[in-house]
Length: 235
Image (cartoon, rainbow, N blue to C red):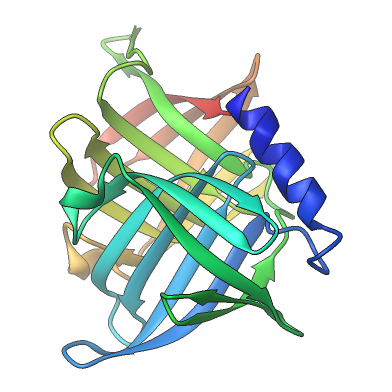
C-alpha cells in the first residue's frame, strides 16, 4: 500500500514538475570544515538516499535516506539511516521543493539539484536489500524484516550501498559512485567510501544476473575477497 501511495504521489506531481523525480540528482554545497562538496540524491520508486562527499579526494561527509513521498511541493523522507544525526532515524522529515529550469530546489537543505539520469541506461535501477550470500557452495538467506540491513540503491548510472541498523540507529558504512551493466557484467567506479578512502578511484567488475526477480552478484570485493551475493528489490 505504501509503495502504491508513493507512486500515485509522484505521478500526481508530474502536473507540477516538468519531469519525474526518479533517477539521480546532483547539487553543490559549501561546508566550513570540508569545503566544496558534491551532493548526490538517488531516488527509486520507494526509497531515497542523499550523500555529501568531497569530489577532489572522495572524502565521505554524510549520508541519509529512507522511504520518501511527494505531494505538491512537500517532500517527505522517513529516515532509516543518518550517518551524522542518528537521532533522526525513525522520524519523518519534511522538505519544500520548488521546480527549476534544470531540476528542483530543496529547502531547508538549501540544495539546488539538477538531474544526472532518469533511471537509464543501467539494468538495475531501484532499491535492493541483501538477502543472501553463498558460502561453501550454499546460499544462506537473510530476512528483510530484521533491523540490520544492507541496502543498495541505483539509478541508471549511479549506485550506493549502505549498511545500517534501524533498531540501534547504528550506521555501519557506505560507498558509491557510478556503474555500468554491459554483457552480463556489472562494474562499479568508486567515488566515495566511508570505511576506506584509499579505495576511491577503484574500478570493481562483477558478474551479475537477474533470476526470478533477484539480483545475483559475484566477483571480488574492494578488499580482494571473493563474494557471491543475492539482492531482492524493495517496493
